[in-house]
Length: 256
Length: 286
Ligand code: HEM
Image (tube, rainbow over all chains, first blue to last red; front, top):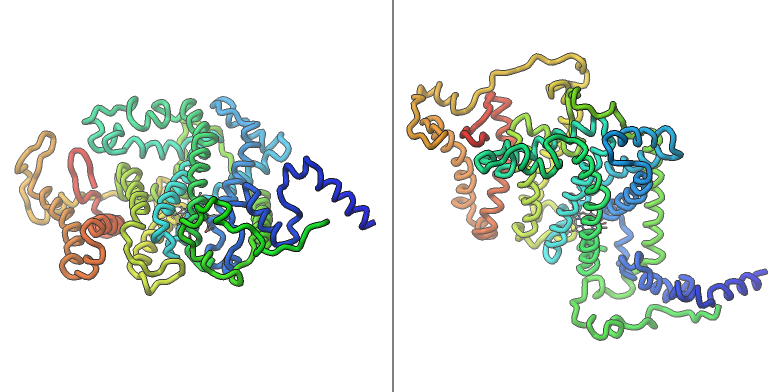
């Protein structure tokens, strides 16, 4: 019996197709375990070996990793939501309602998306706090801290743009509050210091650019949708790539 | 399987792999350690990560099932909810709107937070406390940062749990459906000075729309004086501190630090002395 299994495995793993995909044997010895890490694009975010301390949770609290995990979770659940959601003020609200009532697992995916978003905002703050408290922003990691601040801001803006999409009262008014602040920006807002002096009015200032109009309406919904589902995730992915690359180059600051 | 039992020692050296480039790169601390301090990432770390992902996914599923995402009435510009609240992570900023005009609360202060965070690694020259938790070796940095964080979170907690109708203060045991009496009676610092010191209201000079009175000039003195004294004290009496930072770092750091302290200061002025604005011009009010 065992012989037969060995024979089958041999036949599968020695084929040209298999070997073209996996460049290493089964990771049951150290050499192959190392080769897995080298040759798999996702796993090679890791080094091949880490210090024993890396397995201790109490230094990083896994917070950066968790933040990334929440991001992946949001991307996956978000794709499903996009199948059903149309950013049209006449439809959007009902599309979200349908998710909870007529679409199989639609509600579950929406809830997962919402909870992961809360969790990501929370964990990115906690991650920053950890990095501060361990002094991990000190040379040579200053710039990676700056990249981190950009990630923090993009995370918040992504959450905020997503908040408008259900097009319910909560969404509309939360974004209205936010856009009131944009209007008050010094120099470039129509209600901000020196704004009127520089010729800012409701239909040429920074709030107008943000909303694509003078009220939170169809253009604003479309803008927020595109930023939320396409623009900002791309920016995020780009800066995450830099962030992770730098961590691998500089190594961990701690006992890792 | 005809696999030879191999160990790490038989792997190609990094240098060879990279055509010698690897030799040019400074070795990290991890690479300088011997093999006995290390474990392989597969399986040790990869499995740990897999397990955490499963646990967190289970947690998210659990939360999603017991507490669904809210969906209120269809958006309508005819009915304004009372109160209108931003998402929780922005409620700190919204709470600041009680004490500051929107250009400060919504634009300048958040921008200063971001600028401050970006500059942080460049204005903290202390080489100690890198890579481990410590308070005693970097007291000022940890205290300053914790102060800012605490401020941020306290404002969020107030915004989420203590603000009800008309953005008035509600205790958890209050009736959240009854309006609170509107409390007015806020005055500008300028007016208080005018009254208590009996100053004249005729302007000294008029710059366009700006009529500068004596009381108004005094408020400028107060405002700029706050920064001047704040910059001055460490400069004059804590030379070691100043010298450790140098001119540029010192000024950046002190400006950010004093602006951060100014936020609770203004809040106290409002709560204790009913002061609305400390500084009034036709273009902006602080
Ligand atoms: C989307 C947001 C972010 C993601 C996905 C992320 C991810 C990570 C990961 C996976 C690590 C490895 C260590 C760990 O798990 O703690 C890390 C380290 C680090 N992060 Fe982030 N991060 C994010 C935001 C930030 C922010 C907001 C900051 C700071 C302002 C920051 C600064 C750093 C620094 C300096 C390190 C190196 C820490 C060390 O060497 O000990 N990151 N990040």
